[in-house]
Length: 251
Ligand code: CO
Image (tube, rainbow, N blue to C red; front, top):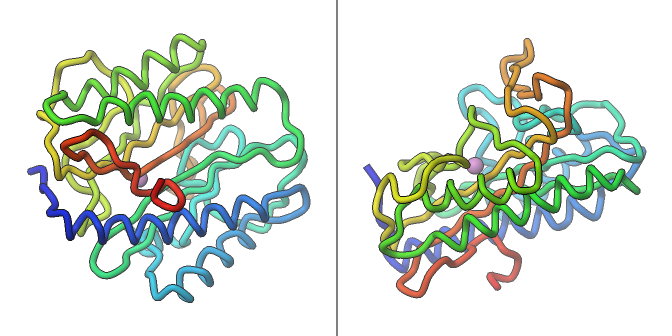
């Protein structure tokens, strides 16, 4: 069941997402060759606690960290570790918080130093695909219009969208209905209405879309070893169209 949110609730979801956006922005400035990903996890935890926000992922289905750090061929749910980032890597950082009863959830992919043109383009196309999807988050549209817009943009660029993981409704739970796939025909799924809040999160692979899960039970990697990128925003559907709640400064 899709839960519609009141303007007051959407304001709370915005506050949570602004905490996430500010923390991601700070983490982005820390990403450079020579750091490890546990360092990023620790900063995220410290910043969340300074803002009285609870990291949303730690303990979720047993996930042991606050941040997901997905490097190169890791699609999502990469676990922070002592492994050092090197020039040319790309890393997705995915963070969520619970604050005042509501969740925020967002992710960005960041280059480590100077990266290949291909890696840069993969990240750029993934971000563009997210915004193409967001444009379709309008009242009276169908959910799969979002999915289709993401897939079309990705495939036109010669990349593939991951099927195994999807975006989701978000509110007083981290994951609510509806699921938001990044692929599909347009005109299907629930009718979009003002008050819906969706986390839209394309995961885009350089080569094939097939996924392997590593022995830790979490780390999702590309089966063919190709690169992968991931961007996520939490979006509210208003009478006037989409409002990106996790864009910094609410703008
Ligand atoms: Co999410």
